[in-house]
Image (cartoon, rainbow, N blue to C red):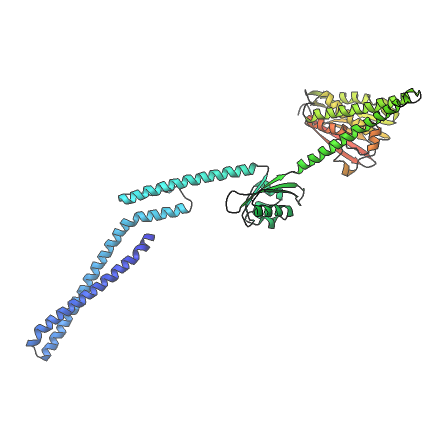
Length: 485
């Protein structure tokens, strides 16, 4: 169609020129014939005969003009038809090139140009066009593969990645970035980042990077729940477009671990310092003269022994906790009948609960629940839970209950003690955390028992749950995979 649009002005011009030349030719021919005819008849005819002859000549000339016009128009029509046929034959490949180029521009790169009985020039052009088409297809294929590869890499990253232009509009953003910022990609792409999310620290990082054209980083806390602490690394992209790359790291867990590490170091230092200070004080008292005081020296030595035992228990619990956390506690997992283990563990508390006037009850499941674990590990879990219950149950009862359910076996330690406040229940499994520090230390607790329970239960593939109410007591529930599960 484009070729016909190009050819139409030439055809119209040719027809107009042909008509003009025909008109000039007919006019000149008519004038010449008229002059010759009039010159031949004027000397021999009178005026009336001359008029009649002139009318006959004009009629003949008119007929001649008509025939000339018809011949000229017929010749012009034949010429136009021949030109159209010739142009259609010659310009047919151009139509194919135009249509193929249009389809390639629309993204269909698998089009070919069928050349039949074409001249060598069209064949050469078709071959060059095909080579260009193959190169375009190859380049597009590589670009598509690179985009897919880049998309897969960005999608699998745990960091959030965004690219923004010089005006602050988001060009790309992976799913992690959207999740971290609690927005969808539709809300983020092609919009200004700081219009969608308003964090002063991030704004300052972007502005400083754009001003200094250098790397900058900052931390900020998100406002959406759950709150996260994000660390943003902002850098200029290696081009002159002014585009930026923003990489977001979720450092919430890292900062929590750093806080736990600082608290752990502080707690360990405090817990070890307390018995060591007592041992040092009693030793100095003995050295300064109490050694020869027969009424006090034995009491001081007993206190030194008691504090040394507390220090020994703390170190033993630390070693045990380290073994559990590093996965070295469960050396060999075997079938463990928890009723038997619980019964043996409770026997060691008989004299202690009798002195404290606490009822220690055992309610075993008659179906004999069996778990896959380490016998000493199950004994440690039960012992620590019962010990913790004794520490926080001034009077009343402690019940150890076992139960066999579908796929799991349960150990519950239920006390009627002082209970645990709801805001403290998530922290009782932390190292050295005590609900009542003075009471626990007076009872000889190290502050590591429940932490050992939690990590050891998890090492056996189970989990621990807590239900408690102030003034009514607590229930610790241990769920472990049964042998048949």
